[in-house]
Image 1 (cartoon, rainbow, N blue to C red):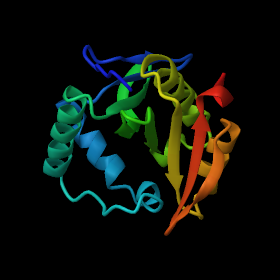
Image 2 (image 1 turned 90 degrees about the vertical axis):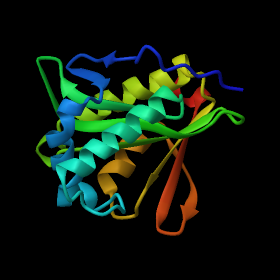
Image 3 (image 1 turned 45 degrees about the vertical axis):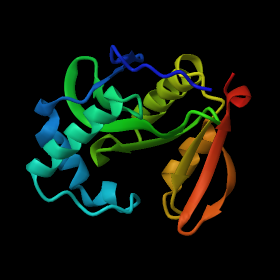
Length: 175
């Protein structure tokens, strides 16, 4: 069974990126991300309607991390800490040692390897620090880029649930 402790917050770094904690000062950038039509088209959520909603979401995320229920990182470049996307582990099942991964990225950064770098870092954190046995990801049939990203990272298609395609990565397939 997982023994989670996300304090202090685990910032992650890659060659180009810093994955850092979401803070109230990110509210405007988070609103822009969650209000973006291209980003939202595959996420099945309504567009954000206000910066106040982004602030409430930041509070929700902060509480989830404090309660060791989820992890949520801002994706930014090392030389510019402006939010360009987010990546998270959530739906953590401490009995089965599993979690779901989710991510979103501003369209101007699509196709530049940003999410590949961030995903690799978070998968490594999930397996090595959290001690997960498997990680799942859900996408929709039209999100070809996300499906390709998951398959490139050894996620296997395990089924469909309604409008979602479910992928899974087993710990052994990562190492």
